[in-house]
Amino acid sequence: MINVSPRQLEVFVQIALHGSVRAAAERLHLTQPAASMALAEMERQLNARVFERNRGRLHLNARGRELLPLARELLERYAEFGRRGGGEDGALSGELRIGASNTVGNYRVGELLGPFVRAHPQVAVRLRVTNTETIAAAMLDHALDIACVEGHVAHSSLEVRAWREDRLVVCASPEHPLARRRRLKAADFAGARWILRESGSATRSLTERALSKLPPGETVLELDQTEAIKQAVIACLGIACLPEVAVAEAVAAGKLRTLKTGFLDLRRTLSLLLHRQRYRGALTQAFLAAVTARRR
Image 1: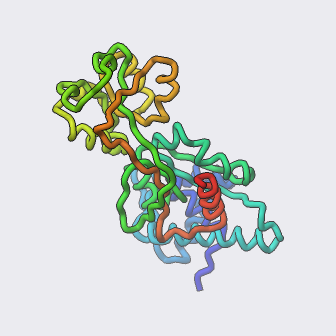
Image 2 (image 1 turned 135 degrees about the vertical axis):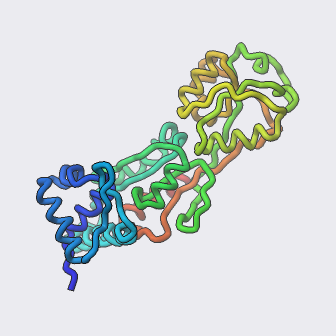
Image 3 (image 1 turned 180 degrees about the vertical axis):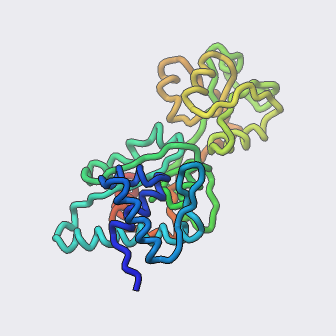
């Protein structure tokens, strides 16, 4: 009979998340030899390895990827058992790993996390911010518990729930010729110099769809940070499609001007991502409840 302990499961999960025994030991306040022994004993009981070593880091193999969501579910259920057994139904603790694409993570983090953090101060929230493509990949690898992205995600293993509406605006320096025109039409953008986000970004995808409705222009810069694009536009190096929430302060200060482009559909939906095979324990359910309450 296999008798894997919660400690062994914790070591397995932390190594899977951080890529090394040393990092796992630090997170669990263990010595490195103790963490190594816990992993070795678990693999001995399973009669199978769950990691492959590559350039000094440990990577899940096929068996490990299969077992990781089950290990995390067991640990969450174990924690819930202890909490309920101790009569602490309302006192959530533990760690919640959340992913956010750049617009959400940089400009709507208060809306996304605020209600949950205030209601459950004992929960450690780990937020990872990067582009939509990378966040979706992390969800598929079970590296995140839940995510919020602005891009379109279509994968059979991921559930997508609408969170709130968002939109982009075309912005330019006040000195840019297009900013001086009262009425704009698509033809006015012929030969325009555009500054774009990197491939894999949801903002880039929506911008490309918008550009397909306009006369050909020129891509003069490709940057992976919204703030960098804002500064380039302010310097009159080109124009860009950026999230309205990201440029609001610069527009109010007169550093940027939004162009009236009613002929372009720049709306989009911010969405929550959940893995269909991932157990949704008390932390995930509480976070979903907080986000839903905020939306209402």
